[in-house]
Length: 310
Image 1: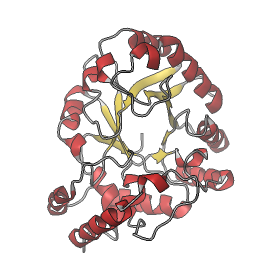
Image 2 (image 1 turned 30 degrees about the vertical axis):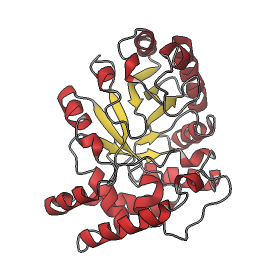
Image 3 (image 1 turned 90 degrees about the vertical axis):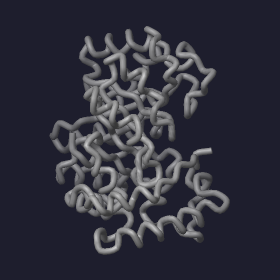
């Protein structure tokens, strides 16, 4: 897997407005040409549309990519509610059925990494999900299995990790939400579990592009994510980060990406990159590698745990 991966939610034409298939495919091919091998998708990213585009890009490029997907809860809830049972959310037949759908979308015989799209660690010691994973692996339909951890709940998966059946965790990790480094990262290093860091730019906040006057198209979910005075809060904090990275990074986006790459536990970081200019900027930042130690120390001051998804 490449250290810089490609987050494919934005190309699914679902919740993110403005995606264009022709443009998306062009960017995907450029990403492949530049050496990106990890492409992270999910069934719900356009009900298979994102998966279909990735499968097409792989076939057209004649490269073998590392393709991932995610199984939505049968209840279609994000995050998994505390009272939701495993039988309601991820019964064995649902896990297998959704994996088969994703395989058809990719037009592949196997998925490199299949993941639960939400999780509740109270399910960790129940057998149904384990049986499904073992069956899919034995059939060669899934190489690795992981959990996409609920938003801002970085320890909600550790019990499942102790079973030895989880190969990776996908988790929100960025300059604002630094909490996965507290407990999850040490656990994963000790147990040889990969970390895929998602939302490195906090849905755009850490690119520096979200300002008090920023507006989003009708129907774009970011309209709600950055509601009320949230844009002002973000802008105020981003300006402080800019002061601390002066002389080290060209902009906040570079610092945000390099911050994620500064941790040994992080296997790959998966920003969304629909446009070629963003892809090239991220590749450039990733090539510079980890932040210098003194800058990394300063970044601790910008920790800001909150949940804009609600």
